[in-house]
Amino acid sequence: MNERTDDLAAALFSELFMADQLARNRLSKVLPKGMELSHFGVLNHLARVNDERTPAQLAKSFHVTRGAMSNTLSKLEWAGHVHIRPDWDDARRKFVSISPSGRRARDVALAAITPLINEAVEALDAERVRAVVPVLRELRTRFEGEV
Image (cartoon, rainbow, N blue to C red; front, side):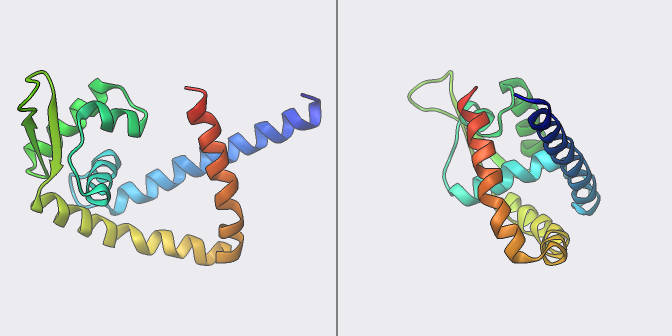
């Protein structure tokens, strides 16, 4: 890389990291009491796939350790937002599904964060956002391929 490319790369990642931090901070503040972004992410994922997942599959989907996912799932189970059951064919594995309470919690959280997200898209202009999403998606898939 040359110096101009290095500067561009540093500027890109500096902006991505700062935007990520600020977005997480703003979204965390409007989530329902006791819900963390990681909780919302798992509930949203389970609601969207509408099927059971193993803790290992969830950890892989979120690029976190199994221990981190286990911690998140324990909190969600304690809150009644997920059901965790044993695999009837392999007692070492478990399956996770979203509960009706989890769906309601996810819907309440989504209703809370949607105005913030919509406001950001409107302020930036939807066409500009549409143009940048494929670039960000490609950047993400490049990093996923390097794992």
